[in-house]
Length: 308
Image (tube, rainbow, N blue to C red; front, side):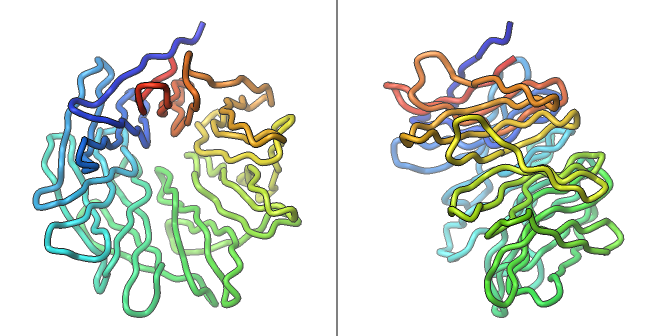
């Protein structure tokens, strides 16, 4: 039977995991009494290493790779208006980075080769895509006829999934292969389409907005077929992660506005995710072995969890 293990980052008033890798290492951030954000990595044995990027006023991880490297963004103490990118290596050293000309850098995903994707802003617009290679060099890109390009996930082969906005600011999905070729797509009858994660086999998971204006979940198969995911009794649902087997975790809203969390296995079966005595449970990631990380709220605050 699955069990929940709760944890708190040291000296925190809130603990917020953001991602988990297949070694059961969890990356996230915590807030203290002064509402300052610091990063953390929780090892499989339960030990927690706190970190801050040097000269940062806040540090916010976004993703962790299979080697324990963490990427995310930080705000520096110089008063820079936008976030800047960082890579925390497994040995604890930090590397900061920005694509050329960036005034806002938002890394979103890192693959096992240490390749990072995300988006950045500059004088020409708020969102352009970037790829930071393991050697530190950059590739930047924009989709044709787009006003914004925002990558959200990268897989081991370097394929990237994300969203782009056309000149009328309507949001669509894209899949960019490592060689730079791009396929765009939309969920049928969707107002907007936002891919979030891409698996090693090229399965893309994300969310879309239906004609009623509610967020819903979808999966795009490697052959391009798109399947809308239905959660029973949900007025809306948001998927947050998918593992290589096709198991999905996310949250859904019922007809009265109540919030719930779910695990949807690839065979379509759905299991509720509720930390005992929690008023709210938010999953953030799922491993190949279906271990789930996230955070929850109870009478004493916000805490991290892993479901094993």
